Length: 261
Image (cartoon, rainbow, N blue to C red; front, side, top):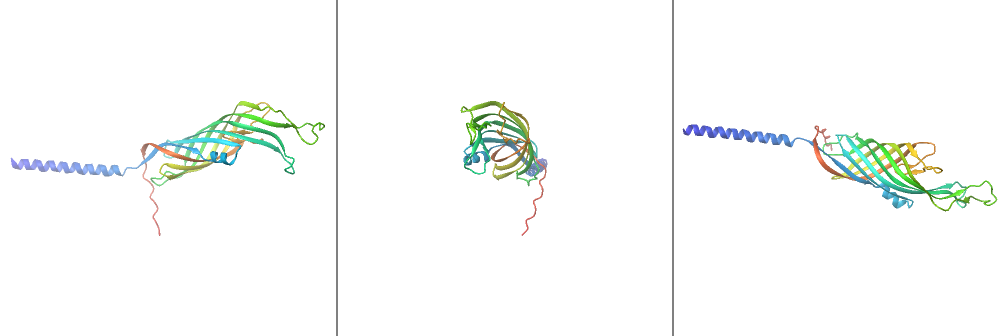
């Protein structure tokens, strides 16, 4: 009887040891599983507040965001508001007899939606990016003609210059435009979850609703409108914070290069 009991005890200890060994193996395997963080990155475009400090005729703010949906692909959005006052100056041989043809203010909001594709392969644990991407953009705004001058071929009343135009400001509302943007840029993690980004953008304007008698000269989100081309260019320089939401398993990372002395 005692021999049977001893045999059962050794058998139980054997199973227990096997179970502990399996558990340790599982934990070891689990600890080697790799994952990547997915979530929302939110920030602001730094270039617009900086420009507002330098240029008294400009004021703007843009909020940027992107959400990672695959290993390389992010959906992205930017929403902003801008106001800009500018004047058209008649070219002169000197700076004494300067003639301001007109002075205007453009003000409104815009929304950019699109995707970013990361072409850079990070080492495991890094999340920097070299991106190419695109945006569809819509802008709604108004333009105010603050002042203007009138050229009169009859030089009797104003022999040496231009006659003053109307004195009351004219506001043109319910204007809108839309365009596509192609962009290239970088995103660098400065420190935990904080990113610095920069991008250059080429835009193609394909709709542009204008007021009667006064064209759209500057569009919020797009910039200055050219007379002879639908192409434009702008840039983005932003800082953002990453909010982790979930993790996904990832492939085995690339081997890190050996350190050479």
